[in-house]
Image 1 (cartoon, rainbow, N blue to C red):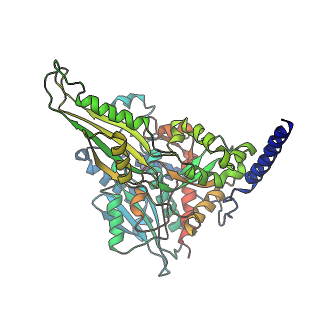
Image 2 (cartoon, helix red, strand yellow):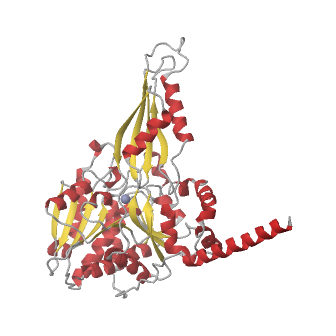
Image 3 (tube, helix red, strand yellow):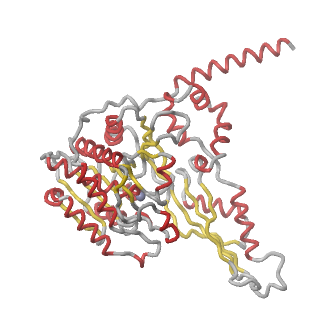
Length: 487
Ligand SMILES: [Zn+2]
């Protein structure tokens, strides 16, 4: 008995020693990348704010029903850019792609260097009628009040368009001579999939044989207070994004009067199928969380490092904790969300056809086809027809040991060296996914401080950006573009 206790005690001590050793030695460090060439710059703040406000007043709305597209709003937006940024319109070549998307090309003096592409999108989501009165200032007023710029699209993502233009206009006013070509591309339908805008822009480049050293789009931010493991702001740079599939489940039946029903109606069969999917979520993996922790691990508490560094022991616990919350659970697995359904139009008519749509957000490693396969196997009922209505596969993961990633990371740290930098997996889609054929190095980041509160404004009521955050994003782009222009 005593011997057993002693053996257990020794085992615990040894395990703890091994575990502690792992905790302090596992993590890499991106935070030592030097920040070069970051100096204070002179932004004409009043003019920059005025431009942003004007941009927000133009209702460049993307509607799910594309027949509601307001062409004039986009043409007005083009005219606004032309009037506001004269040097860019003198010194770059502007190409209108598919009538409404814009490409600007600033030529560098050194031939043979791969250009860099900066992206954003001009369209915004609609404001739902029932929320119109909830806005502190009207959604398309571009009101500037209390140090804040208000309006639909402020965060998502006219800040990107306007800040890029402000930064380049300033660089051109200083007679900066680019060695490397710089491109801007602004899509006009990102919020409804980017098929008319960014996808056509990507094709435009492909046809001309243009390839990029790196591509930077929206989809990352400086998170603050969103991660309890570390008390410093963390800049997350998107290096990959989840895929997306809408899968329909359809059950056909003879129909008839509801007074003499079969044991199961088509709606009953369909409901069981949905229950099976919800009861059997996709397997969870810590792969993407681990990459994230590799970079901020050194700055977390000993306890966090101890747990994250010893997943041979703690993986089940970490998974359980993360799966308990919907937001963190989504980072661990392909998600399943039944979102639409229809059956009989009348109470006393048996449904001839019951149909549901299930929306999946697909983790890298899976494909639209493997997701469909799993759905068919889980439902295991020939009465349920399973079809892919729409889908795109997860993106590849862009490498982090590249000139582009390091430039982005060092510029962020140059703006504020309290900020930690880490790559991450985006759980929603961006226009950037269309550009993988043009560059292996596709990144997503915007210099904007995202807190729990600011994230609620994205696609929500009272969307707004503090003036100083906006000015900071101009300074960020200024330094990043200037360094990216260099050979
Ligand atoms: Zn967006």
